[in-house]
Length: 309
Image (cartoon, rainbow, N blue to C red; front, top):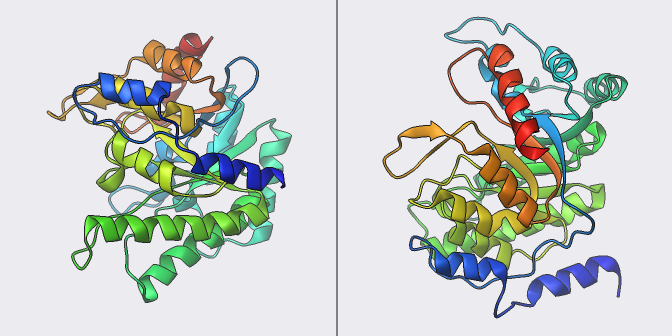
């Protein structure tokens, strides 16, 4: 049996008692869920810093009908100036007709600046039933798998999608799982991982996200842990519950509970959660606030460095 089969088989074996199950049961706002084995990691926790291009969204897309102020190549240059280890090149900011030569040129710039392309992201929705829209969503993810391979990006963060009117939540879950598995099968042929983000809908809670971790059968699948996308009374317990399955960690500068009131994110506590999960990989800042990201991102990156040191 090869390594891929071993991993897939391991993922099928549910554990009766794990640290994650204990975390879920201990939280008053999270119901216990069947647990699976965390991603195996060796060595001490290791963190490398990156910045998501989404942080520059208004500069890269333009605001109020204005022309964009920057290109992705400018964002990459800023990442190098900020002393980062890598850069996340979010798919939304590439031209719709981007070519493989364009991607190679950007990858060349990153390499010469000493930056890894830490990943990219797509805005998919796998909740559609069989038909043209579902095929379009799956084909779009596969296209970006090809592009990620050219960029040298090891992971794409994806979404599950939304439950449609014509389907039940259980049917939608099955649709989403099957689409993720189909895309993971393709991603594996390119050496690219798919990381499911906790991004509302069925993945709005740790329990909901872990249902996908439990049911998707692929060694090329894991979680994109977004620290700003849980909104329960016990956000940090939810983050701790899913951190063992993280392929990528994405940190926002604020969190908000059920009242939607924004409060500063507790970077030291987030760092502690990642250490306890033995996370080894990129910690990607995603700045979503209204101030100038070229001014604010370096400040928050310094805070992250201190917390992760």
